[in-house]
Image 1: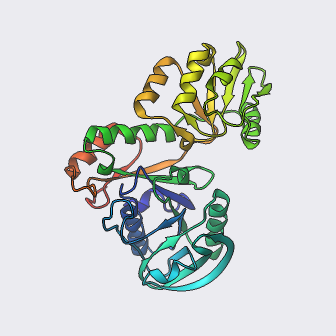
Image 2: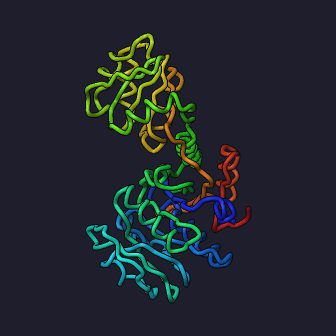
Image 3: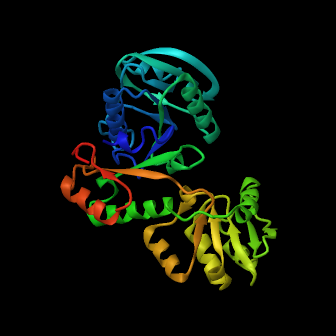
Length: 343
């Protein structure tokens, strides 16, 4: 059971998709079904709008979100009437969205729901805590679209990643892209407190900075690392130990650092977590060969991967083959096809 990997271990869990139609809603419905069977009270939040009947991008029918009696949901005043579940409103929050105020309700008669949730990390955490205070056993945060930031450790205790055929008609490409995200989520963290403290301070200030071997911090006077790799490279010295990048790490920044200095081989580039890295698998492997080292302030706790062998474009992989291949390459994390069943 997918629920076995998270129940009684975590209070908040996010489900994120590699892309739209990667099977995230199917995984969510499976968890809801298992929770009903095991009498686990769920809270469900979305980091945007989800649950609509038709995918607005591919114009194909989407799986609906089914909520059982007792499930606690966060949605908005405008989205509430679009589901057929009977919802008792428990609390109206101070958080507003383009779809109205966010409210928390309990399902009185089971049915399909449409959910729309908070727009910021802070609001997601606050609504999650409100649900836990109400008495839910587990809050599931449904990451809308492919917003992998929902997996950030600042949002949830643990993460389930949904992947599948929608990524490519080539099964090996699907596995390569999934393995890449798994590797980013599992990047090694900065360890001891002495090292973490100046790095945390720079990230909290949103400051790109170089930290030397004596833990002295030199801020770089740029607002973003984008298109500034050469400036960053000029600040790397013999005694530099860490380069802190609070925002996104992209291909061009790394390439410009490599082309402007050899000192990059002596440092660790530190980002907040793996969701901040936007580099394709082949470029990432090339950078690793060049000697680029990347660490994170906070690792992502990836506890399961779900696979969807079917793509909305009409093609599919043999379910058992996709599952077996994915498990061959990803051994330390449970890989599950919730439709196929089994362990």
